[in-house]
Length: 104
Image (cartoon, rainbow, N blue to C red; front, side, top):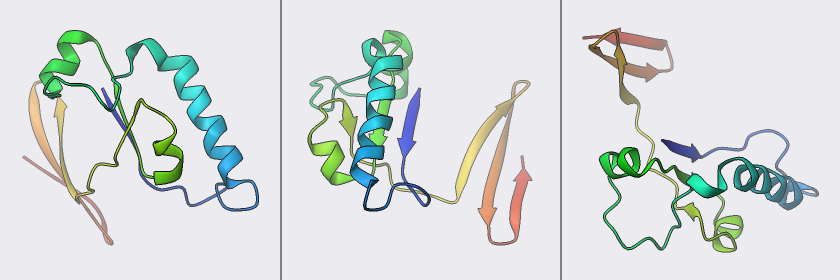
């Protein structure tokens, strides 16, 4: 599993922003700690590797918070296209200002 915490539009701003970020990171560590891959991991991290090892990669956009937490990875670049698997079929999903478009 890959979790990417990329945007924090509500509730993470000063004056309590850092405190709220730290609470979220503590919750992640409490719930997923033994499953999380440290950011300094030496093996090639692929989805297959994560699946095989039953591990979770947690990406976090806030540089300050990430720098003091060894299991937080840099944020994953965002795209407007992704794929879903539904009943054995791959569905291409595109996000736009006009909504969500699904195709095969």
